Length: 137
Image 1 (tube, rainbow, N blue to C red):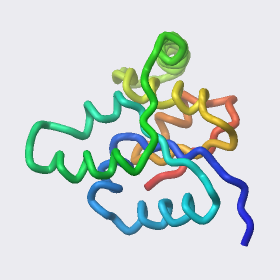
Image 2 (image 1 turned 90 degrees about the vertical axis):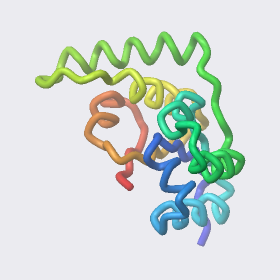
Image 3 (image 1 turned 45 degrees about the vertical axis):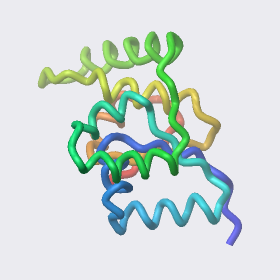
Image 4 (image 1 turned 60 degrees about the horizontal axis):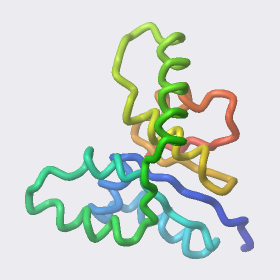
């Protein structure tokens, strides 16, 4: 089976699942290895999944297996634009700042891009009109 390499971006729940050795994430890790894909996570995601407890050991181990993406001005400004556009179309007000950083990060990665998330609706809203695949975990 020949599969084109992808950029696979993890949100907080996906990184937690990888740290927890969950079956769904093991399948994606296997896909990444076999297809020469790269698994990424935003550094902002670390703030969502760590809390200074012993659980952080597993998160730190998982973070070593992914390529962490720093949030610089390009991602920051783009995240603000995506958040504002999504907020204008949402009925329920909810802070989408971290999700918008993940979405903006996805737009900087080599294509094709897959975002693994526990909240596909918010990421689909943020990435509407962009060629990024959103997969629920």
